[in-house]
Length: 266
Image (cartoon, rainbow, N blue to C red; front, top):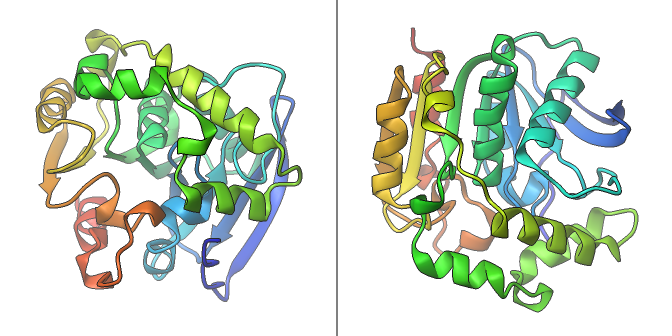
């Protein structure tokens, strides 16, 4: 079971009706809004539990759980990045947020890019953490793994975290199957659509990430106002994602200062 994020003195959580979906969110701190979108199979805490307290020292952090994940409800449809983008945009409108910075990790990073394409007025700056935009951006073995994905192969910390917060723990299988199907059927984001995004972007990839460094360079070349950081570590080490945590974990190893420097810069 994942450790809960320490509650900020300015903390609230709730649900909002979004496109027929009961969507869960948490808000920490105050200041310029930073929206966090988690990875596949994850919750707010499993992806961002280690970094939320740090970001919330100087910002209003809005963390979201997307369709079928964690405490958020589901629809009788598959999950898509486009729908997740529209859902997150609708939630922000419900919360009265008209412009924000975004940080998405893994699937959440792909969703953030779709938000920038579909709802450009919402995005001030964006951080794409280990985001996939093209099938060639991961090794061949990744697609072979996804084609044979089974719930029992899902990392145990993610399974435990889902069961600890979901209203219906049996939904774990549904979430797993929908996420797996989304990746098996992953469609490239056309280069010309990516190139339409003009907001400042920071692309972060671990040097031992499932996302290849070459893919980060591709994204960097397509996004006109982007910077690329390749950081030592695997998929999510740089934010302390739960499946990466080791006994020698140190907060000083997190990429929060790098991200904050980008977000706060002019």
